[in-house]
Length: 200
Image (cartoon, rainbow, N blue to C red; front, side, top):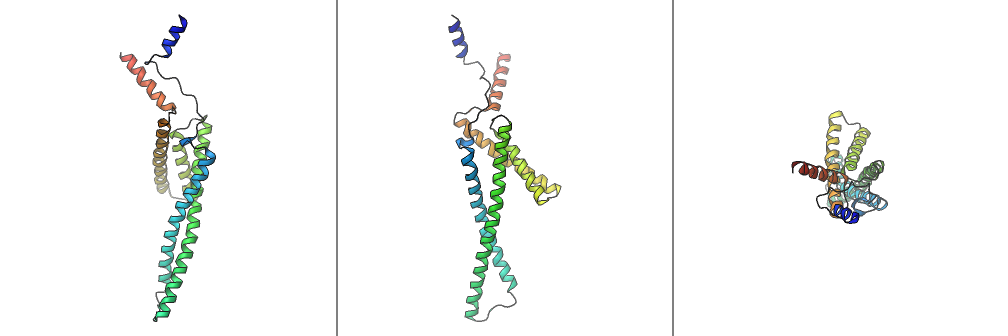
């Protein structure tokens, strides 16, 4: 008799879901040891591409400005002019690619390390809150490193907040789609069911 009562309670569809225990499931089902190098590599590649295009363009403009007073007058001179210009553009692009790729990779690594650290401090709970903290922390460090004025630092913090919130919610949506429960989702469901129970 007691078993039938307990089974009925367990199978009650109106019963609120149990409190979610802290989970150690990795974000996006990718272990941190793989996710961090992948994020750094991707950021370095993107930063390298942006640096290559920007650096080569700026080097070309600089070469033209420095040699505008001594333009060649012969076909051979123009050939050497463009050859030297292409060399300077290639060198400037490669130099800027390494510079920007390294910077972007460094800050991306900081973001994912802070996110993982906050997850661990919170007892293994992985949701958008840790991502928001990581976004704000990294943008704050970036602003302090570059000694931005207060207005610029506030704008950077706003970008970090929006980016962290968006990326965190995307990760949470993927986790829910994979069947992982989130503490704040369970909290909202419990409140709604408690309210419905009181109204009924």
